[in-house]
Length: 615
Image (tube, rainbow, N blue to C red; front, side, top):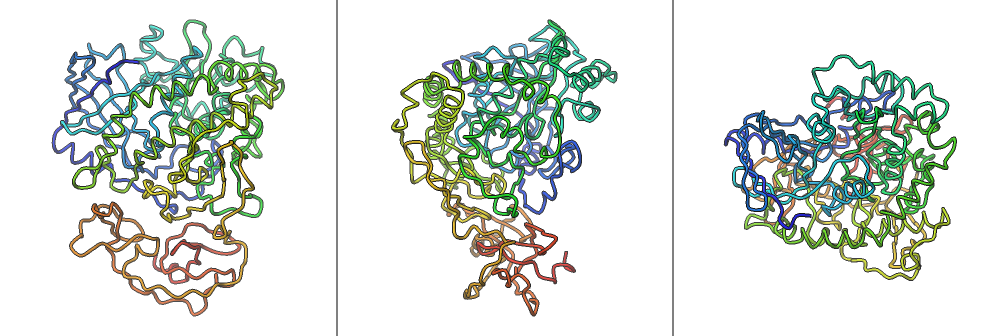
């Protein structure tokens, strides 16, 4: 690791800068998501056409100065754009960078991902994931840290990663103008059949002929044993990646969404090789998303609430088959390379654990990285006189606190995220016991003591999409913030997992409670946000609840639209289930048998009939 973090200074026109900030204002309502469908079969998201996060703003005429270890290098032609997908709903944005100067590059590379990793609190998950890959000598991208300035405005510390692009192939393999590098960004790339052929896109847009790619997919689909594809597929690399997903609780690569990887035909051995990217959702981050149920408060009778052990103490087969879109579908490549004979997979799994995925190896590395970036994290988490932190440009988005960074890097779980060291410890113990491995007795000791910050601790199974606003305050009652009592104690055990008394499925009937009708002044109060104070009328966003502004003194969103009492139905249909009727028309859940449901005043409510004509 370098002793000095490189500084990237991006320069764009004032007009471009203002448009960049404007484009960064991104939020999401649960109603925007709709039916996710089956990846690769049906459903918009599976085909990669679901665009609920907005268009990405691109600047083609940026310039850049990079400072590394006291030396400066200038670039006169740079493409700079907002990057990421779901990460766009957070306060800190991700960016993509491409050096367009024909005769210049940066250490042999021209394209970089500049990631805030705002989804997770620690700035460690992407770095650790890449480092694990590289320690095992797997074909992988690399990650490090950088400081970003745009027009001399400090944006903060970021993770910089190279990308498996054409320039990468040239640097790593001297493969100029590669014709066999495919990016599988959209969902459903299960490495079998014509659907994958169309889902994955060639990085070289000049290539129109894909016979080698089709031949590979066809041979995988027809193979009856690993020997039949050993000469054209790097099977070990593929199995290592499956092991990585299993150990880290990953839901955003091949096993679940079947995306966020590239396929490259290695010119040195003629084998197609899988290369993963985007690691911010790994190592115990947002693991509930493996269910592809982005609203964990709404479960049907066949889908019980999970507890922590469901995600740590499960076999690989259980993890691979957990996503509901694969329930009735066969993924031939998994049967072929894993389930028909697990010996090779099991050996790679145990090697991965012995050499890398263990506390003795990872804990010191985590401590080293934390010490290295801590001064920059502290600077980034310190608000200015206006209450704003550097780089938090999406006014709709959330940001983690310094205390959450520190705690979640250790053993403390927070909303939507297991503590990194806790996840490593718990998974390590489970694998060691399941496979009868000889493992470090210090960490296998159930009395091994570790600290948990109870003031910061939150529910790691919270949904990432419904907990976005005010992520810096886990005590806020966010929409659908259903506290499943995981009760992780400092011995690494979890007690009986009882549901919170307020965590009720709308489909289940209960006696209606008598509550005094609250008096609302603005629509935002229905979902727990105050009305804006007099004089605060700057509009920063708009959704189904009207216009929103921001109270920088209180560091909270506030509503601008005055509340008007609707003409309510004479009889409220949802009261027979114990829930009032909604005042607004924002639908969070729709059931064919029971109707449409909203969420207001920290409880479910039934959508009234006047909404049918008002929307």
